[in-house]
Image (tube, rainbow, N blue to C red; front, side, top):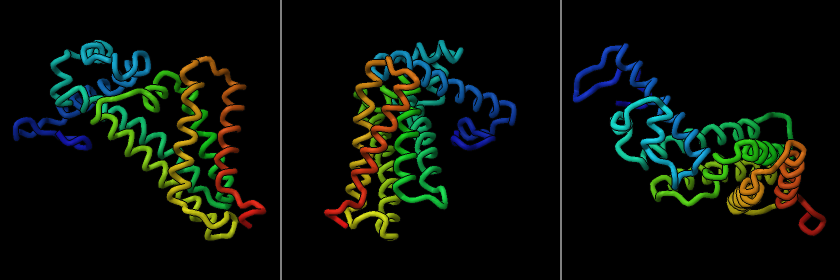
Length: 217
């Protein structure tokens, strides 16, 4: 069944709208359950049977939607990453603001959301994964890098930022803020004031990494 279809098919037979809606709802509940289980247990410990229990479906029915455990968690991870990428891209696209301001706000927002996400964020950012699932994470990192590279290119073109390799610096920014949140996430003890301080500090570091200085002015 196509992920975006409202009327699916089974073995070539067209499903009724009612059946298609029921299957779409089951798929949604399975993905949400997978997110909950990973947030609590991590990718390595998460079991399909537990996901089925949380989603209130039979274990076998999960495999009618997803051919393997890896495909289930890949789809869940893709949805999580796309949501976070959309938030960063929206900040990057805000008009009337400098590239540096948008870089700082995008980094601070991502970090704050990650720290709020606790177990899920730690699993998504740091936990070893099945290679098929990890490929989704690598694609998400590349998407984030493209956003920051684009902002750097804007800043260089306008003269706000010094001439630099936007592609390399964009990837470096992503690597920096993802690495920087690992320890706070692992500790699971970051309070609201601490989140603000950590987010601000990481954002300043990333802004400074691309800023025009007296040496490169």
